[in-house]
Amino acid sequence: MLPYGRQWLEEDDLDAVLQVLRSDWLTTGPKVAEFEREFADFVGVAEAVAVSNGTAALHAAMYAIGIDPGAEVIVPSMTFAASANCVVFQGGSPVFADVSEGTLLIDPAQVEAKITPRTKAIIAVDYAGQPCDYDALRAIADRHKLILVADACHALGASYKGRPVGALADLSTFSFHPVKHMTTGEGGMITTNQSAMARRMRAFRNHGLNMDVQERERAGSWFYEMTDLGYNYRLTDFQSALGMSQLRKVPGWVERRQQIARSYNSAFAEIPAVKPLDVRTDVSHAYHLYIIQLKLEELRATRAEVFSALRTAGIGASVHYIPVHLHPFYRQRFGTRPGLCPVAEAAYERIVSLPLFPRMTENDVQTVIAAVRQVVDRYSILAKETSPKCESPS
Ligand SMILES: *Cc1c(COP(=O)(O)O)cnc(C)c1O
Image (cartoon, rainbow, N blue to C red; front, side, top):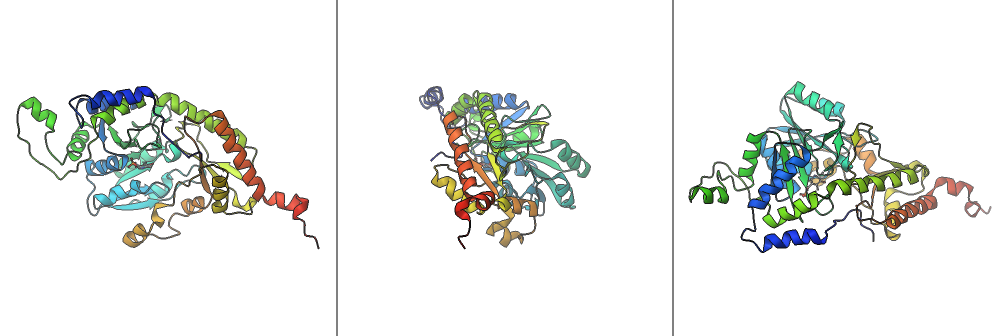
């Protein structure tokens, strides 16, 4: 089965990890600081804060901007649950905004419609790897004095009007889960130009202590104070070594992802029942996911049937995502229900994620295209109307 995404580890990645495993420092030490510096430089910001995963990065961001009970944060419904869960971790309420048809990115007009006196922030999700419309979102945030956070877990290596993702919002979060653009096994990062927020997040990932163990060593002191409630969200030094080794490969990997997407685009342009997501002209798309929308009115099948047929053909298709407001937790806790985000709900019935990762061979790409063509042909309404074997014998 060809999965929808997978990691790529080479000998030099393994060597980098082994070297740290043989050293004196295993957890948060010099390699974490080096990784943070390289990552900040990569996206062109002053500060990067490494944490144990992308969800911890989102949680730290909500902490840094002061989300507390009573605060509302606007999030798109078409995303992974963690984009909204992070608001709940801090006692706040996620308010779901619908997405734009075509791109399935958060719709700035819907964001503006959901603002109340309690709104504190907007979380933009660069769904599939395409940056949101940051100029529009920034204008709304400035007009209403809101903080703009980017959940950029899909979009490392992407850019918007020539500006890299990671530098487009007040805080941007990344994940290093194996299906993402680069991996540290589990891992995450927050990027920002605001050093006071970076300092808060470094304490937050380390139990809320005002000094970490390296700083105490340097000061020759045992003394520290816990100044706020924090967590253990630290990344290890050997993961950071892996992260630095992987980060160097990201530009080449993103190019390969874009190349595969171009092959898919030109093949699917000839299949009327298959519609890839729209890509705006002012972005460079990082293609974490390649998503097609099925024109179900042209098919005698549901998405579930197309999905199973693809899996039977060895294509590890997936679906990203069930709109977050439809999950039982949100329905029960926040009273969300179908009809709240009609564009996301309608899209959910039609979307399929196809395999896309840099290590795919040309042959893999052609296998996916052939399988999609075959499955769609089998279920095509046109095929039913014109194929003689389908005519009624009467
Ligand atoms: C992967 C992902 C996360 C969570 O990252 P983890 O490292 O798995 O915790 C959050 N938001 C989005 C959009 C993601 O794709």
